Length: 116
Ligand SMILES: [Zn+2]
Image (cartoon, rainbow, N blue to C red; front, side, top):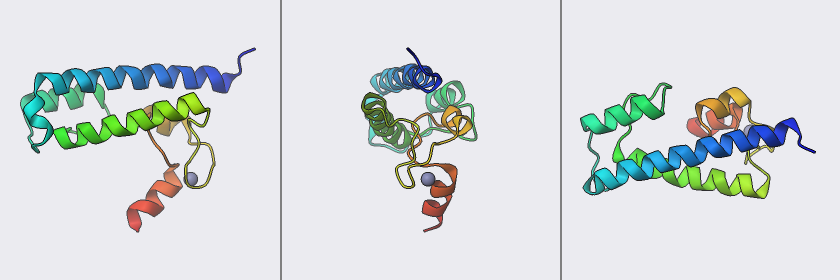
């Protein structure tokens, strides 16, 4: 028996694993960039290729931050809480998860948090 929610989570998990691999591969290519806030052509290409949304440049700092968020999201996949807002426990919309597969909060909570 497989519910729609479970197969969706599986798809996002695959996406998260792929993103993690891409970030790790990019990190291996330029290990010294991890601690520096550089905007290399490589980082721009990485951003265009992996984050089609409104992020034009993924810096090394952002990349390592993303990696942590992806790890967290993978843990939530394993724990069965993936796609649930950590603040209000509502489901995060699939459109938001498609844009940010590692999102921890629904749009409402994210906006509240960024304002505070
Ligand atoms: Zn929420």
